[in-house]
Structure formats: C-alpha cells, structure tokens
Image (cartoon, rainbow, N blue to C red; front, side, top):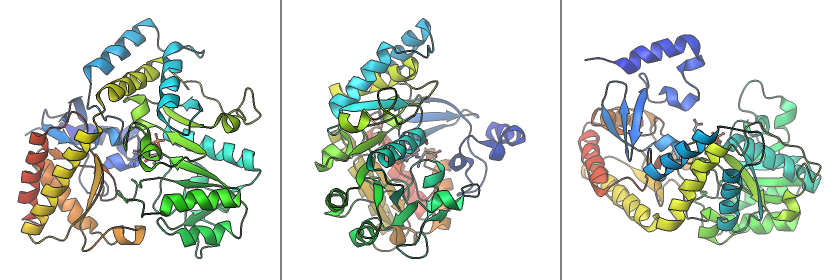
Length: 424
Ligand code: KE4
C-alpha cells in the first residue's frame, strides 16, 4: 500500500521547519506523520493516497459551507480571471466590508487584513492608542494568533506580569499582558481594579483550549467591568464570527464589544482577517487617523470575493439551526457511545463546533480541560482516521461541522467512534 503522505512529508521536512506551514498540522500531538490533502469537496477530503475522509477540521473553521462550494468557487474564478491583486480599492473588498458591517451588531466600520493574527495585533494597538494605556488582559487557554504580546502565559500570581510562552518574545513585551482565568470574573477584577488596562481580549466562546462555553454572566460581567474601568472589550470572533450566528457570538449573546476581530469564515477559504467597531474608534486608523496599520494584500479582491460569496450564501440560507441540530446529533451519538463502552468523556458544544474531552466530569474551565487524557485522544484520533474520519490532530482544538455535512456523515462518525472507544 502506498503512503504518499509519508513520502511527501519526508520531502517537506527537508525544506520546511517541521514539514508544515503551521505547527498543529504536523500531528505532533497525536503521533505519526500528517496526511497530505489532495482535494476537498463538501464534507470530505481525499489524501495523497486517494483515501477519502469525513473532515471535521474544515481548515480550522473557514469552510462553514464545506469544501469547494460551487458558488464560492465560481465567484473566485470569475474575479481571479480579471486580475489577482491591485494594491488599490476594489469592489469585492467593499462588498465584503459592507456585508460585515451589515451583519455584526457592534461594527460600524471595518479594516480588512490578511490573517486573524494581524487583525488581533492591530486591534490591540488601536485599543492602546484610544485608551492611552499599555497593558492588556487575555485568558489562560485563549489563543489570538502569534503576535509577540499575546504569546504570553500566566504569571505566578494574578497581578504579576505575563511571561513569554515562546522564546523570542521579549520579557518587556510580555509584561504588558496580564493573564486571567476564563469564566472567573474575580480574576479579571483583581487586575482591572489595580492596573490601568487598555483592553480585555476574550474569545466569547473559547475554541483554543478545546471548546469551552462562557459561564452565565461571564461575558456580561466583562462588559460591565471594562466599561467601569475605562478598558475596551475586544471580542476575538475569528472562530465565532458568522459561526455562532450570522452576527457572531455578540449577536447570539446580545452583547456589544468595543472592537471585534474576525477571520476564517469571512475569507471563505482564502486569507482574510478583519477588525471593526464603532466609527469613533475605527476612525483613529490611518490614513484619516494617526494609528498606523497597513498590508500589501489587505482587501485582496479574490479573497474578498470568496468571503463575500460565502456571507451571501450564509445570509440567504441561514444554516445555523440545521448546523446546531447536526452538532447535537453528533454530541449525543458520541456521548452515548462513550457511555456504552464505559469510557469517561465530556463534550462541550456551541452549535456546529464541539470538542470531546476524555475525562470524568465537566469541562467548564481551563483547569478542567487540562485534566483530559491526551494519550487516549491520540489513540482515538488514529482509530477514527483508520475508519475514514479526519478529526483535528489535537485534544484541545474545536471540531468543525459545515452545511455540507449530512446526517449520514454524523451517523458514520458515531459508528466509527463506538468501534474505536471499545478498543481504548
Ligand atoms: P490566524 O492568524 O491563524 O488566521 O488567526 C489566529 C487566530 C486568532 N483568534 C482565534 C480565536 C483563533 O482561533 C486563531 C487561529 N486558530 C487556529 C486554530 N486553533 C488556527 C490553526 C493554526 O494555527 O494552524
């Protein structure tokens, strides 16, 4: 049997660090070499050996409509045929910006960039300029891209500075970032009552420690605390934007942050990030304002065409109820299978994103989810892969459903899970 993925991966390791362009793809958390994906269509991918899988990575979130949606592809090809990039304003860029402003309640103006990292990095700079403060708060287990100030882990005590979570991040950068506990408002008040904070940065539904839902009152509490203390509230909706609902988590929860960051779905599979908010804040950005941020391919017409086509289809079809029902079917099936096999499992789910944790009891905090068994997940991952189910290769990532996933996909996944859970 050929193993083209392995051969390709060995070649890749010769020319790319770790053989990948982003670390999680290397399968280090689950072992063995990654699959090289040759094609995708709907809910399925085909690997370099021609084997097909039901895909729950879906490029880590952008593909809410599924792989290679014909209308999105058509719009991309049509736009690309006219030219790829101009470094000048273009209508697809404007069309995407108008759709975002129309959809996201707190966003009156939006700046388009190329990645979520760039969106969050720029939003933090803007918040610092607007508040004239340097320090920011993030949450343990929160991931907001790889800008220096956000690759920070919790300091020893609540009030101590963060420390770099990666070599190459100067201590001086990390000391401006305080790390609090998700779903723990007291840990936030402990910092905001003592320090002048520019912004609190939060994933309104956490997706990067696995899925962890906001406890009742947590987000509302952050909104009150930040307003009281003169800090801005930044909702990092790179995952939840156009996923939790068409208007994102802020629409689903009825809350308005001061700045929203977006990515993934708004690019429809091509590189687009964005940050937006009230005109009063956003107008501080160059060229009208004095806060600088720029990008060669920001607002790229082909990428924006993919995003605009995706949002157009989402608004027309509003697949959210069906996505939630499909997510519930998968959650129920997995939990029933785990119970039947006597395997401790917890699932957190928000609509079409979920994470299965191999642990007893709930998973309501970072401390909870860190108790999950990664070795059991690795075994489960490979058992599922052998049965044609492609899960995120890490115990602490979100599984993504799309509008292209079917009940048959879900039932096949549950059947495979029942078999694999029996072997753990
Ligand atoms: P990008 O720079 O990867 O486009 O976006 C960074 C980012 C920002 N905010 C949130 C809430 C995010 O989830 C992300 C990126 N998510 C990861 C998956 N957990 C992308 C996958 C990867 O890093 O390869």
